[in-house]
Length: 96
Image (cartoon, rainbow, N blue to C red):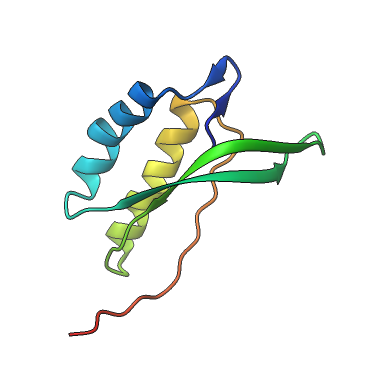
């Protein structure tokens, strides 16, 4: 989730508000946030580099959970005027 916006960048307070209001209600079981630096190609063809946050959510592989993840991405995109939000998915296994 890119931190650059048309008016500057997503502040720590804005990020925390997004987590509190949007992410936590959808995934109260928990998640992990990682700080990163990303690079991507914009729709105009230009290369962009920006600080980013990786939101890692472990969830069931069911339509409801997948819809909640997509809804989070769309909410972030709208709230912070993002051109896109990358979603990746991979299987995970719990060792008991």
